[in-house]
Length: 123
Image (cartoon, rainbow, N blue to C red):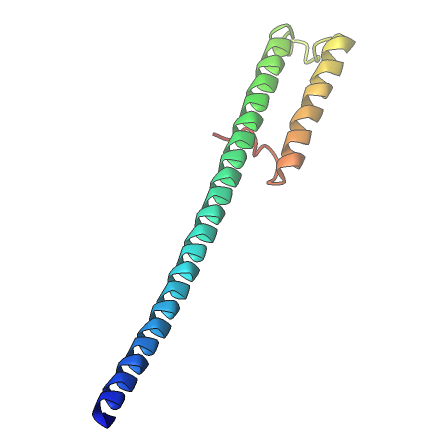
């Protein structure tokens, strides 16, 4: 009888230890799943941030190209420097004002990017 009680007790102890080990494994699995979920969320946020940065960069390039096209259109109507007389061409006040507006636009793009002058226009 003592032998049977001893065997039964050992069997119960082993079953208890197995149950505790199983619970620990389940906790570890849950923790690992939580870590993977957090990593996935962080990666998704980083990808979103990168996409937004690329979008802003493309918009800045488009604005710069548009401003350059406008400036080229304005400069087509300007007469070149008369080399024989050494005089500057007589620019209409409208063209001068628009050129100043374009320059302010380029400067504001440079300031908003925070990366120095003419950065938005670089390829």
